[in-house]
Image (cartoon, rainbow, N blue to C red):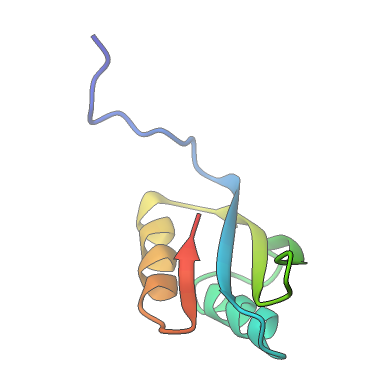
Length: 89
């Protein structure tokens, strides 16, 4: 039986998170700024944006180097605390 207290990730590791919000002009920059609060310079590897079919929503996928579970949890909490963020995948 697998132990439930075992860490899923071997840190540091590159993790992509997709953040979905309304298609507003500065949404991508807003999302990146939230990540930057918790990361060192150079930890963001790639940022990709994609509009929904009817251009109402924007998904921003940020691939970044996470150094610990605590850092990853802090980023999730930061993202989920803002009204502009509708979903984090």
